[in-house]
Amino acid sequence: MRVQVSLRALRSSESISEDVLHTVAGESKGTKMGLVPFVVLKEPFAMRSQRHTLTPRIRVSTKIAALYALGRREEAAKSLRNAITRYRLPRAFFSELFLHLSLFLGYPAMLDAFEDLDKISPAGKNSQPSRVDRKTFAHRGLRIFHRIYGSQVPRILKRLKDLHPELPYRIVEDAYGRIFSRSGLSLQERELVIVVLLATGGYQRRLFSHLRGALRIGVPARTVRDVLANNERLTGKTMHPAMSMIDALDNESQQTEQSL
Image 1 (spheres, rainbow, N blue to C red):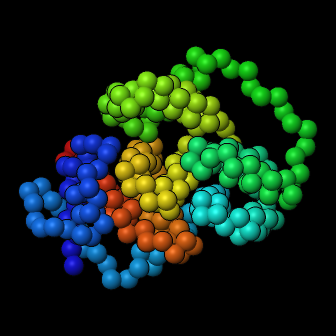
Image 2: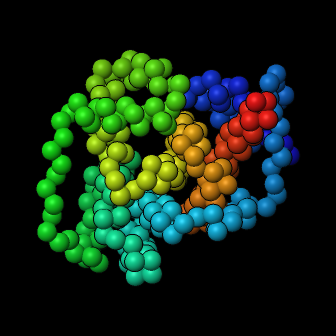
Image 3: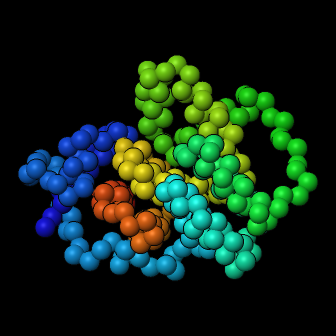
């Protein structure tokens, strides 16, 4: 069986049409102009994983994020305790992870995660929040926004404004300026966590944007595949659409490099 993936369609928009989504998912409706074939391997995508490409921080952060996304809090807390014991990762690492989760899972999941963390590693004397003005947050956020979305930024911001006039400011300043720009998690680690959350939740359009963003900021395609394969084993959810997307993006990137 072959899956037909339209690189032209994937490249031209942050949003993917329903037809392309069906195609990426392996439900091709026929051969079209500009479609590139990809062979679907018979073995599960999880079998393609090579764990040596993943650091302990990536394995831990993506696993715990997926467990909280699925509401499997007891398993998440157990994994949290094991990670602190085995890898000696600092409390600050998990604090940043849970602040990051709030952007995609909301405050309830974030607060549950902090409660679990506090039982394992009680908080010490809290540091004072940073006193940074909104202009600085906006500048930081826009810089990261450009790193992730590249030349698509003007179109994305226009679309956000069309949806609601507050959205560009809320997303760039609050999400990217106040959360993404924090230290404690690298931008690559943050993008991989997002990829897992979106793939687990089935948000295919947002997923494609962040898969492309992960590659754009230097995450190797092999690492993305391994994260997705691990997530498939953990959650039992198929990562087929996400794997097909990353294969298409990686293939396009290699073709671009060869043409230079």
